[in-house]
Image (cartoon, rainbow, N blue to C red; front, top):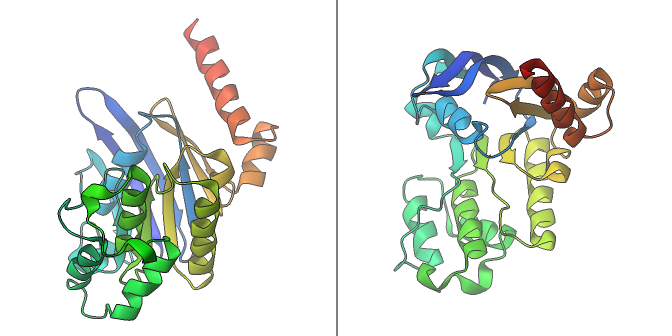
Amino acid sequence: MDKIIVSNLSKFYDSTVFNPMSFAVEKGEMIAIVGASGAGKTTLIECMLGITKPTTGDVYIDGHLMPDINVLHKTGYMAQSDALYSELTAREHLKFFGSMYKKVTQSDILRVSKITALTNVLNKRVHTFSGGMKRRLSLAICLLHHPELIILDEPTTGLDPLLTNQIWNTFDSLRQQGTTIIITTHNMSEAMRADKLLLLFNHEMIAFGKAEELFEHYNVSSIEDIFIKEASHANYSNQ
């Protein structure tokens, strides 16, 4: 999977979701999209994939204008809401979604079950699962077919710290193998594990780059302080 190029991308409904933005993601990079609820994080990744049509702009992934079925077959996407079947077991989910990809094997099912700590509950029906277990199953489905690009919308919400750390270690391993990862998160410590940050505030991409470069530019020592500075500036401008 080659680089991702986002050019002049925006989305408007009755009001602005996010104003035009442009950025590029290199192969094997992990990008954390950070912003408050309602900042447009989910809509941004949906526009990048072609799930939602942008108002302006284009997205090219691996040289293909999105949406493109060939790219989507090489992409793992985990939405914020779990799209699961309550009467199916975890194993049946993995077999069902795996049947869409010819290269998925039984060993792949066991691999993702181990990553997401679902090995002991593979034969349980999803209606018995907690919210955290459903998130883990959604993540297992996302990782099943060895995707070259992974896009994850708040994947660790509701998970305990130990499992969250295990999953992030998996993300680190995948990007070292060349997998490109884009993740939205509210968790600042998780965001700091990414190669670059994309910060959304007040319908704008206010910053994109390595954390240390952004801290130097804003003369701060944390992501929170960047948002505080931007909020203070916005409040001053509106007075």
